Length: 123
Ligand SMILES: [Zn+2]
Image (cartoon, rainbow, N blue to C red; front, top):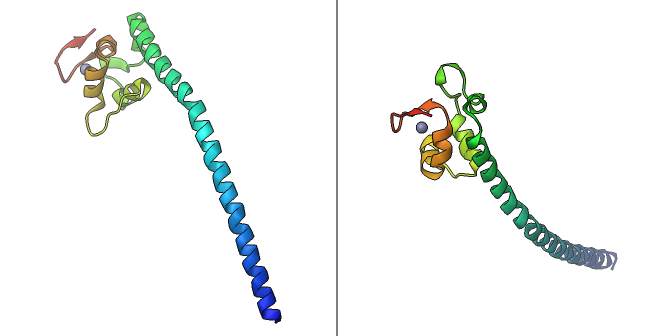
């Protein structure tokens, strides 16, 4: 008698907990979906602003761009990876330098360096 009462009580609590979890799951899903829809335009603007910033940087005089590079016209390690990231480019297994050449040729040309891919001395 005591046992079955306790058991029924526990089952009731399990059921209540399950209902609470289902409610919480629905609330979280709705909130996440709301946040995602609010983030979409911000992500779009972020991508546009990054592209614009890279374009503006590319138009700056040579002295300003040289602050990117270390002495001897050799770019710091990870330079192209950083640039690709700032441009929002997906590098994958390719070389970041090659991806920048392909996806952002104007920006690539604006970086003072001796290119190991096309052999040219920029700019
Ligand atoms: Zn290059």
